[in-house]
Length: 153
Image (cartoon, rainbow, N blue to C red; front, side, top):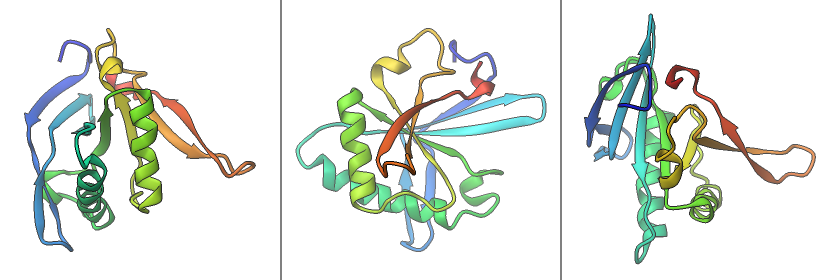
């Protein structure tokens, strides 16, 4: 709340619906950022290394993928598609988590996934705290790019 100038609201454990699976899941948090007529909801999913975390993560991501691939306006109360942000423990865990996404073909067709870490969320500002993995067409390898969400500024 203190780190984003355009903070509008937040919800703890908002629920989304994976239509094809017929299941509802609670994400960890939703933060709504708004300025003038523009707004975006950021859905935060916290990923932790615990026993069997990879399988649990893959199961949850399949539900997120279902939600995003089948999203239409006002699904789960969202006027526009929310941005999914995976909060990982550290940089290494962020890469491990992304590898699970790629290995299990969990990238949504209609949305991007942004990543962050606990330490990045502790920075004084959040506008440059997000990472997107993009494929380098020349090498075929993925690389991490910093993403700036201007509404956070």
